[in-house]
Image 1 (cartoon, rainbow, N blue to C red):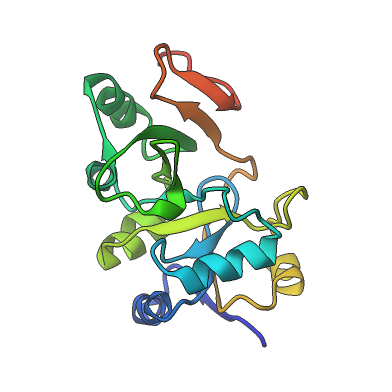
Image 2: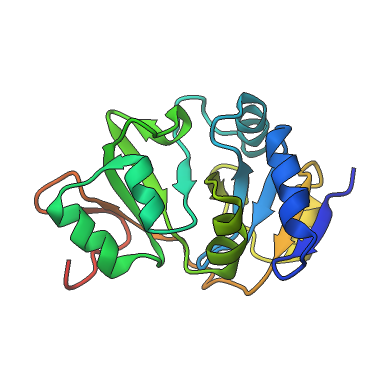
Length: 196
């Protein structure tokens, strides 16, 4: 099986992607950091396929990728401090851990927290915003290996995915993970922004 490949700017992408996500499809998508591998965060078929492709444990949550900062309120419970931090640093290369809200999918939650990103990338600000839906995601690699960055190596190593979306390349550096449920906030991966 060979995945379909669409550029972010292709007008046919939206309809194809929307139908794919409705049927348990798995997609590789661009971000401002490293490419992501995921699908609909409520679809058990997509979740099971990505776990199998990565060799990922059942109890390990995925990161929720959102199309806008406004969408965070649907899945997380925010206070004044966390709302201010999100306003300053998103969209951007950060994953924030927040108190889960009523709309958070179980696939992105653990111990009352939800991990989420709002990438600074046209795929999210244009395509996913138009579709008005989130994606669950993880880096494109087998667990324990470095993230794959190039289209050719992704197609070679992950031919079982249904769709690869191309677009402006990210930094190639995984996002910093910041826990905003703690006071003061703590960097789980990477470093804290200086003015957080």
